[in-house]
Image 1 (cartoon, helix red, strand yellow):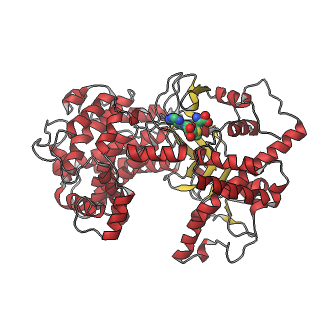
Image 2 (spheres, protein in one colour):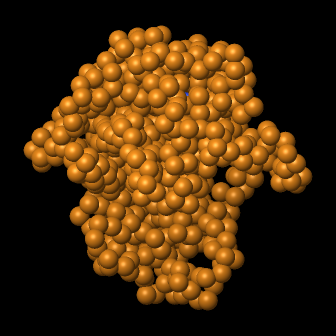
Image 3 (cartoon, helix red, strand yellow):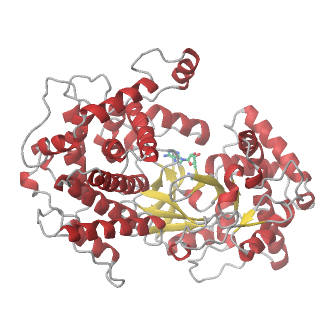
Length: 611
Ligand SMILES: C[S@@+](CC[C@H](N)C(=O)[O-])C[C@H]1O[C@@H](n2cnc3c(N)ncnc32)[C@H](O)[C@@H]1O
């Protein structure tokens, strides 16, 4: 009746992906590569031991497989709505197949006939209050639901083991994640129960008690003590399940993926294929190198990241981004601190009386710059790679100068430095759209990237970035901007980034594409500094920026403006970089891949029409 104490099947599973577990004195287990892994490669996949959809939006996706309608290329035009469980009226599934799977695995136990209180049919929930109620409920019930689902799976596994005797360890390598593999990984996870604060331990105890009293768990050999241990593991191991737009849909217990340690400069990223978690290499990884993922959004300041890592995961991060002895570590000094909870509370209490350091006033100020002072055609012509101009060093570097000064460092040169296969040869040949099914994925993209009409590197600005190394280019960019006198709104601060990301979304929603493009260019500069080049956030952002810039061109033409080559060049570069990044992250099966191909197709067609 005990959990697996061996990890033989798990190790065999990892070995089939060229991975090994090693013991690290500070981190516990670590996953290392045993063979070179190419950027874009699947490091491993991980099956959920339990998933819980967020209550507030569980009507938007299948609660079993976590696919949204139309989320895959093949089902894009499918209009069949999700099917709602007719009994509880609060769970949604793609079809009978998903419903049956969910029913067998957990839904038969947790499905309660609908009452006016637990009835969550979205169409009936018109009032805002109702939706808020749902959200509050999420926090208190999510742990219980996760405990129930995981406990059901674990006890089922234990029962099967009793019947079959101890699992026979086959000799063959297992490249499939069997239940045995998942269970071995789960049993090996840290729970940090010695570190959790008292109020959480009390919460775990009460959740465990409630779960154990459920009719379907009362007779299992699992004790409350073990359920408390599960809850401890959930807290420092579980994943948010998100969609392609990176919106959270739910939470999942993924034991195999939980073996990977954290870095604020990760070399791998977590993506989801429905409810299957996929870890992908976002950089080339060498044998013996540790594979890391980020547990927190690395766009946060060092203080904020480290606080979450301490409070939720109980460790002190010492990754390269968290140290000051290297270029990546200098990013945090540049970003500074975000608005603290205290500042925010004070701002809400006191209103905001014209203090330009406060977030709302920052936003107003930025919009004024974007709408009135930032002349995109003039700036692009002034600060480009061929003519040698740099912003006046005696004046503060305001937002638009920052963007036009830094963009040439970062895209394309930072990209080509991180991926030698990308070359900017300065040819002016038109881009050929080749998408033949049998050409290799990367081959197609790289050929197109060489068709950039950027000038060759020796003609490029700034000179100090003429080095081939990613770190040198980034270091030079950081050096350059720190020599300017401080601006009223300091462009490289994290507070400016958060204001601009919000404004970028707002202006896109308003259809103000010209402003959105400028804000998007600023966000691209910051993301290029903060995220590794093939990070999913960068892929997603490049696509949004390309779309905004394209819409801006169209909007301008409708209003009688004339098309400028610099605009086309920008859109083309962002489309190509988006393709490159999407290919290595979300992959060719994703909606994003289809979207970027569509955008490219429209773009090329329009260009050809004008010839
Ligand atoms: C999801 S688990 C990762 C696997 C874990 N090392 C193990 O042996 O089970 C998260 C825990 O691993 C440890 N950990 C992860 N990343 C770390 C890092 N960069 N430095 C130190 N400890 C880390 C922390 O104890 C954290 O709570």
